[in-house]
Image (cartoon, rainbow, N blue to C red; front, side, top):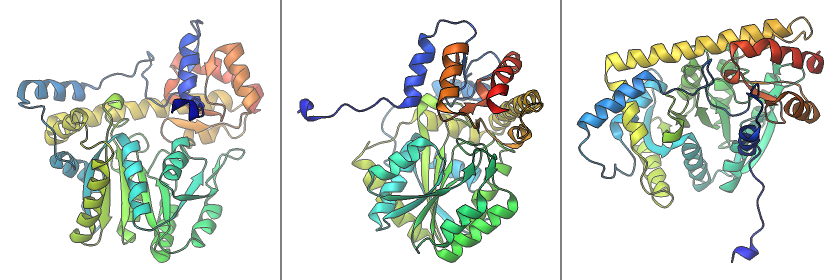
Length: 390
């Protein structure tokens, strides 16, 4: 049987991890892998997470399965964090193995409902197209970001969505766009929400970086505006970044509708699809998040830590932009972008040269993870980038 299979290429980003680990240079820099790092290069366990795990160790009485839809207290608390209470919509959630699991269930639900087409702005997280295509959806692409000018191509995006057919789905990044860091203004969110409502499109909103952009509440204002306008929506949530629990694979998919019965019907379909895929969701990460959000003291500790992470990213952005500004006129836009990523106008040859000559690792797309920088790295990285960007 296996002889009949064709070998598949290694995911480029996963291959990059191996190349970086094999590099023996002490001054190598990893700007590729999309995880948060502190100034010592670590991806730390948040103190709020450690405290929640300690509490769970002392009080947890069973390792039996959770319900097929997951931990309902976790789901309620998470939706309150993401969706809030002022949208006028009702939501039904299903706990998933990470944000990727949430996106996969969402795509399967869209396909099951008879919607064959999803609109995706480019560039986007590379796995988006793979997940949606694997469920049989036709992925229609439109421009989102111009790498050369570092601008959101909002008019091009709106032109594409204005011609979308009723019932089509559209993928939207809630905040901290991956891979560009370029976010929409309040006015643009308003126009997007209006178009989605008028065209009767189904927004699939990917919320993976809440708190890394402008703030915990600020980063979901656009999301909430869209779901308030649209009759129905799907919201995929990842807890990996906001809670620093990457390996726990913690996420959820929420079906949002105007009636509870409609949302619940969507949930029964999501649960059925989950049952034939992974059956039951993992519990530990969800239990940690539930515990943090259940206690005011832990919630405040978590919020303070997340704010500190955001402050560090913003400071690094400003320092890198300043270091590049004397040779690249678009450098100030790096400081205005949000989250962990920026997409630089580098060629594949530029990226490979930086890798071989200087030990600086990033995908060949030119996407950099700002969190991979240490303060002491900024001047060196900027000096190497200047002749390539100027």
